[in-house]
Image (cartoon, rainbow, N blue to C red; front, top):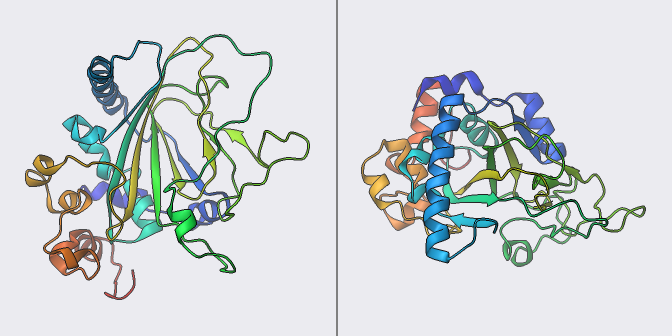
Length: 286
């Protein structure tokens, strides 16, 4: 792993902001060169997927396991500007359990009235299966990085909407002034090349694209190694040809029990952090 990661470690201010609001914005996370490479990869996936699904060019497309379809997207798995924030928030026993590509073409002019967006938290059944009533904290379990490959500084370009501060609630609270909008709801307005890390508990929603350009975004989801993948991760070939830390992030383990009781060979990220960051870890806790 590139030692330049150590230049982007999570700060205490960022930790506090993430805990309070449920998200972090990383400006210029992607270099112009990396942005161009990712855009080209997304366009190839988009073209192939539309052929397979018989989708018209103006239909929104949502493709999972994009990292297994384009090796050019592998570089984002441990990107120096963002990955240190992930391990800073979650620790070393993590892996990439989900990747997703969303392309939202223009749909037309702004409507005269708006309707309520589809607000949700990630990981679906885990929100109901975990008995969190009465507990001080509903556990995070995972987080995602959204890489915005096109400009979303204007409202109306399929902006990613969030409700900061409500991430620890099991039920979202809507505004009394506008029953269709949650309290603190806001559109994410960021330029191309920006990354947004967000807690899986953060209430969020997609929105339509009313402007004249497609919005293109990649989502990389990180979870603890004992959580099942959220999509089919067709990454066996990638896993065999890459570095030890990337193999961990692609789900490798020495044994099935290694997901729950890891040995040093199962989690080379832990070894790398101890050797390069000066941090010390016990096996019982991160």
